[in-house]
Length: 141
Image (tube, rainbow, N blue to C red):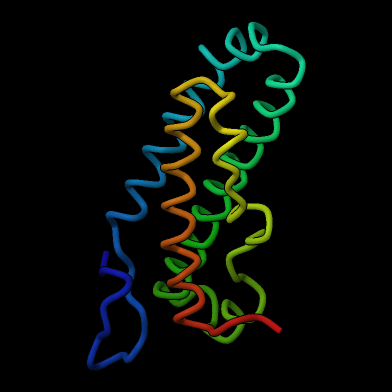
């Protein structure tokens, strides 16, 4: 694998960064484990309002991580020659930024500590990939 966010003098394009893939995969597994084992009981213990916030944030975390992983996999397919760069830049941009980039610190304070951790980590990761996407392809109209 070759690193993303470094310019290749021969290719003049973004290259794949395995660290981002590994970080995303680890955070996906971490979130999955938390939601499957501790999340259900923590959500049940929360009050009605906090339970709604919990569900919403759980969905946002999941969307962030799956969007980032999909973006990375498309970039890998481009570098492997399975998807054309033009098609990737048009059809496979990072999705749902209006939802994924949303951050409400006041609502997060009503959630369990580990949920806050997952939210902040997933937001940071999403923001980094969003900046790479914007840098590579420009803003959408």
